[in-house]
Each structure stands twice: as C-alpha cells, then as structure tokens.
Length: 235
Image 1 (cartoon, rainbow, N blue to C red):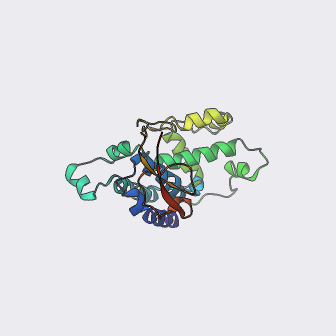
Image 2: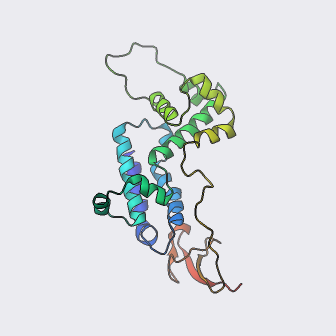
Image 3: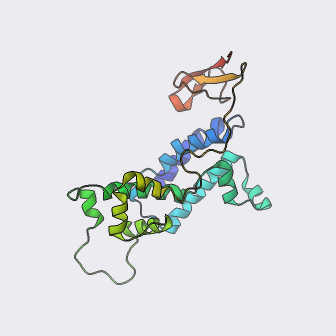
C-alpha cells in the first residue's frame, strides 16, 4: 500500500502544475483526470487489501491533500474558516476514498461469487485452515475486511444471501452504487455552449478539445506527448 501511495503522489505531482492547479481547467475535467490516473494508480490491487484504520487514514490524508490542491484551498484556510472535508468533496463532486475502495472490493467479491466452484479464487473465499487458533484476537483478514465493506454498503454479511444477490450482475452493480452521492452519469453542471469564434486547444492524440490547458507547441502529457495546436470554431 505504501508503494501505491508513493506512485500515485508521483503521478499527481507530474500533472499538478499543468492540470490540477490550473485555473483554466474546469473542476469536472480535473476530477476525471484525477480518477482516471491518480486514483487508479493509488488503488491498484486494493480489491485484496486488508486495510486497518491506520492504513485507511494514510489513504484518506492523501485523498484530502489532492482535493485541496485541485480546489486551491490551503490547509491554513481550512483551519481558519473551519471548512469541512465533506464541503470540499461536494464542491468537487468526489466520493470519499473509503467509497472508492469499497466499490472495487465489492465488484471483485461479486465477480468471485459468480465464478464456478472449481475456480481457485472461489475456493479460497470459503476455505479455512484445520488447526487450532492461537490465543488473542485473530489477525485482520480479508474476510473481516469484506464483511466490514458489506456492512458499510448496507448489504447483509450472510454469505449465502449476498452471494445470491451477486449472481445478478446488473442488480449487484446497482446495489453497490446505492451509497454513492455522485453515481456515474450524475452531473450538476450545465453543458457549455461553444459559440463561433471560441479558441479550443486540441492535441493530435485525441479528438476531444482541451480548453486552455497549454499554448501552441506544448506537448500533452495525457496522450504520450502529442503536440497541441489551436482550433478556431467558425460555425
């Protein structure tokens, strides 16, 4: 997990000046870049993590730091003005890092539940070791983590019941997104009207315009350094 945080911080830092702190880029665009690149790097393999509260705290700290950077809010302003993290998340239309981890873990759990009984991941889900337990509280296992995630999502922890729910893939996807404040497809921003005479910045690696990211001749970091030029809309 620590190496994931380090790699995600490197990716965020590489795009910080040109994307995340730029005032010319919309918050919706920053959000998509952040989720597509940084969060995917940060949570790669998190489906199998057994996260304690201490490890979760480190992920939350990183997520909140990136949130403040994208919104241009200093930590001192958060303390001075008593700005809540929930207010910043709502402004950015982002979920908590706990939610993104839960989504990945529940998607993977549903995928395993739909596997055939002879598949190794399906066998490991219900396997156990035939030996007496040591004294004291057992270590935090994947089963404990999964039950905690199911409870947070409002899904029963009864193995037979939730595995039956997971057989319906579409229904399972709808079920795990029920706690999301900003589910996929949710948008509160009005679509921009690009009037004639508007200058759009586009790169050779994408047909979608990149409004105000760079000047002519600069390279696009999201499309392998493709050159960027200007396009003037005429109709």
